[in-house]
Length: 499
Image (tube, rainbow, N blue to C red):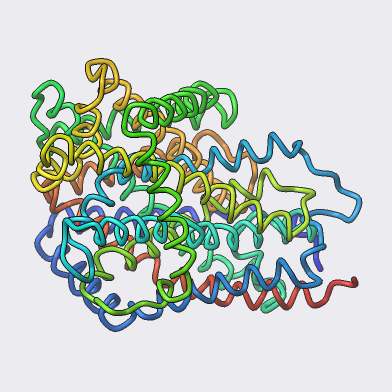
């Protein structure tokens, strides 16, 4: 296999084409917002109605593939040279993987999603004991093993072909066994452009959701109106924060945000666990874990309520696929020297286990406090689901302290994720350079923020978020097909290993 470092050229075609596509989309949204909305809705309806089954089948295939590889003879292959040692101790590695599981999405949906499924389950009546069990099974499904299987495939491809085969740190490198040196030509560049495109929309969706939650939180706490202008100002501030952090370096500038995120996350979990109904939370976790594992295969391929699936599971699978280049890069970077089996088991089980504990604490407390407050939390969710977290904290002690800290946690969680995603976009569009220049890093930071602000201002808050969600599904569709082919390419490369 050719050493990729000898083949890297200074071509900026991936950056130029990716940025032109994104900017054309922004301009189209500015001048033809109604048409963009209709086009996005039509694409969404076509993909989710006619190909919703493919999203489910693909993620089911990824799950089988990654575990078959891990437990086969290939599981002992190192992500690196045979004599490479892990860069980090087990404890450091596990800590970083846990950190990777603490994203903005968990903070945003930790109360809102289980409450929404509890009130409007895909089957059966809402607001019952059975719908509560169903809600927890669904959130475990959406935030558990399946998302991390998607990330593990992206990470496995990047780590294997970079650390063991010496190819560029690009998604296109995973296709070397199938197309050879053509990964450096138009085909490879098209793959990297699609990777960048999917990442931009995944990050923009998260930026929109996170900013909207901050805005509604400010309104809920202090009465500051959550208008599209307010949301846009918040996006601008957050964009400035993560862009400055990205420019100043991946490690130094983000250490403070990472520390704030970790300690606030731990603090909130302990606080809610102690004051939100400890026994109920523990009972809820135990029952939900068993129910989730019992229905693992059936839930993976369940198509019993297509309309519900389009708004939830299909959206989530598309969102996770859009984030696969970014999170895959993160887990790959910290896993050099690990065996494939170690990598797969740690990446798919540790962060998903953390997510389930997190969700059990937040959702269990919300269910308990909702009952004690005669439905205060479900009333807040019905009115505006983005306020669910604050409505829950309001039922607990020290709300005047915890509410502003929750805002800080949301900001820290998003800044960390967006900074890393911006860094990855810079890598994807600079030939896999693991230390891309500051100009290209700042360029992608500003582009993402401006892109989201324009959509919010032109389309209005809720409508723009709906468009972002829709477009993220559309953008992830071709990348899902790329990931399916990627699995066959990984298998072909592993089969050529001398074991």
